[in-house]
Length: 623
Image (cartoon, rainbow, N blue to C red; front, side, top):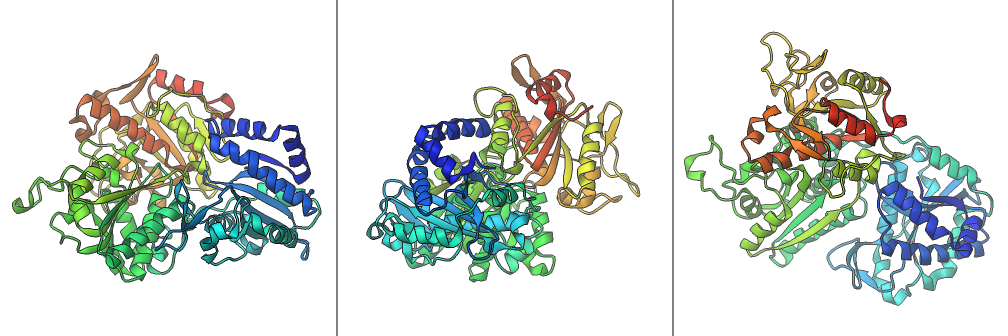
């Protein structure tokens, strides 16, 4: 949804009255839960005035403008989407416009689509940025699925002269990504008239805004094609920048015999694993020696099963962090360390050969294993003592090896319906960001419910399954976890009142109709068991049910972490501070698995009362 919708004429009237920016600012605060950055406000004040004037001069005052339009299932926003009628076909026509106040920029040597903006560093080429936005729209909006030609994209650098950005024209242009400068204003006006007729665009805007959102391309379902055939995912903004910087580092490692550590940091659903698989696929196609590694059995096993479905040899590309303890130094071109927040202090365990128990940090082993080690992480997902994957820890290890580190921050949100507001709500709820819990004001892209008990939660989620969506229930590790019953099913260990369900299967293989541990989140049969953080982490499903157990309770004005109610022996071995951090991060992971919505219940009455007070009654599920 946009922050503002109106015809070109009405936008011009708001600008003249000085009311457009205040409306945008208020909508930004309401929908995103924070104040608009000053740079964003300046851009609205200057660039929207320019675009509105150009459109009016082109005779397109009846065209509809969707300002700050949120791309489906992400938190990314296109500056403006123009909605109207094509002057030749009479069909709906849409033009995605990215507005830049840039005056000086040039392409970064060694990359195809990254440029250097004077005074601000690396940026994705604006033509590539708008091209990816167009592709994303045609991938996710049903109304555009059969008519991708209805969409086009332009980047308008209205403050720039050709000479000051001349190398940016080296990027090939097409209908999804054209580039205009202020010097080419006349060409820009002609292009606008070639895509939009001077008639009302209201109907076209209605169609776009009411379009069904097709199910997203789930990471696991497309891993095989991603690795074996061609790139399946559209990378946006910082995702594309991160991808291009890694590819550049690989080229540099050979051309100049250098080595660089790349860290890609982002929250849940920011696209880290999409980047990882895109890199793995492209580097493999180029013949580079590349491996993917994680510290998660469930994640790695699922990738192996899906990516190797038609070519079992592909499974060998997916490893674990502790498999590089004696790796040849720089023996790989690239090592992609996904879920790097799960890096441990050392790789050694009771099964490690004595000769290899050196006590050397695991992160140092991973850095040494490749010419370009890449780490993708979210520091808020450390859920066990001994998991120490942080940016600072990687930076220190790289410094010890005399290496430089490049950090790319991903600020997009592709899980939770692209809802930045929900992500912020979770962080504030759990005290992972300051300010305390705040009420949930709702978001068009995400549904949040508090439910009176797990029975009602299960009923709601089963309805979603019947509608063709994916759904899972997960809980804090607050109940015993029995072994599978020989020649039988699973014991119903998770007990809340009269409601009983088993945990997910402990075995790697299926048992009694329940999928093996690694496949609980991706196998349809996983719905009948309750998952935990170790089987949910790294995965996503449309709707998430979360049972907050007695290991984390709200008391008056603060959270209390209670290890005596936890059955996770590894976490309980840590200090009180470590347990507190781990249990908050655990529920943060569980609360952010859903793509479209979440239902939450606490077994503790006071904590449940807090949830019900924060989530408006109209958002609560009926009892």
